[in-house]
Length: 166
Ligand code: FES
Image (tube, rainbow, N blue to C red; front, top):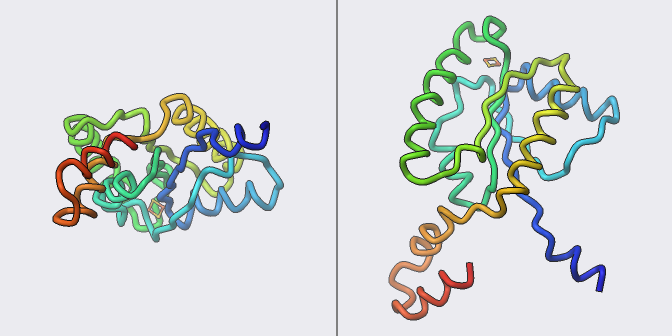
């Protein structure tokens, strides 16, 4: 019985888009230092946060992420000079769009984590995972994704039934 309960407990899926020079190295340091943090996070690395297109975040949510983290070098430390400044400006505008389409902004976090900040990486990931766990599964895009996937293949009653099962 205990086993069945554990099987159905909600475990949030967190996608972390990180820059390879700072945050990825910080996450790596946390691992090699044997620091403990939730295993819910899947890391996708980029050369710089300036390369992280907001569409990647939308796609992550659309394809089942419950939370998204974007993290890179601190201001002034970007290895491509101003990539993180561009990213910060882009995401400030993008957050408004996400809010407009109904995404709870508590599901998205933007943080600076350097290569030496393994402890901060652990803190950020743990805090985001717990926050998203409290919010529950991300539902906003699941209906849309389902409609896209099944468009033309299901009649309205079947689609309605599928929505209700989400
Ligand atoms: Fe890390 Fe640009 S190289 S944010």
